[in-house]
Image (spheres, rainbow, N blue to C red):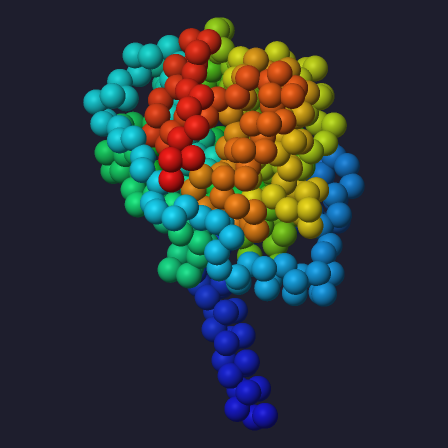
Length: 366
């Protein structure tokens, strides 16, 4: 018994020291910052809040069942072989295209628009985990282009601070070539901790707008949560984003459960030309914070978009469903709702100015 207690004590102490010392966990808000957040309209009791009640309790017994399912192998939860990606060359990124979008898998994109290069949730690491060596592994062996070969980036937007969206190692490699970061409230603390200059960070609350050289970014609501450590859940804001120019109106959902905010966004800022909609890593036990595929299709209708692309899949196994389940289910749901679906390969560029976009069923080849 003494040995067991000692082992538990050493493991607990090691975990505590790791959280305190490792830069992966970022930086928490100060008391003064929390007082300022309290004026945001969606921060109370020391935490950011969703617009509607969002119960995230699972219970011990159900949690054990889910954990056992996670530990099981098989069930087609990941591809049987690495997903091939289409390669990009830095010379292809020349800021001359009016509106071009390239998917890096999961929720990461490069958007070339109005002579600007914009990265969206650039999680370029091998694993979405504070300890990458033991986290879920990326399905593809490489990215469409290495971070080191990317040209100068005019803006980066992050939707929230979870590891599969905000990656410490990616920020370390990117920060020297990024002009400005746009993030929801309190997420900037992590970037400051990681060496990004304060003048290069803009934090926004829901419904805030900022203009960068005739490109408007609007920080819009999502139904989710945040936190990179054990005790700081709801400590930073989560969001969706709108990117507007004179000729293009784009929507990026970030992570979100279904809710009335989609209709409100559509009524206030729609219609949209193109939407990147969360569809993956869902489960009936946490459907308040991640949409089921049928809800994703309905949310696309709610925001009044002309076309939608399912995202948050194709890179990591973070839930119990088969890895192709998201795109198969949302394809059926979108067809019923007459919502045009776009399904590019990883690394395949989408010309947003053209009505015809990639729709091949590439995942069925694996």
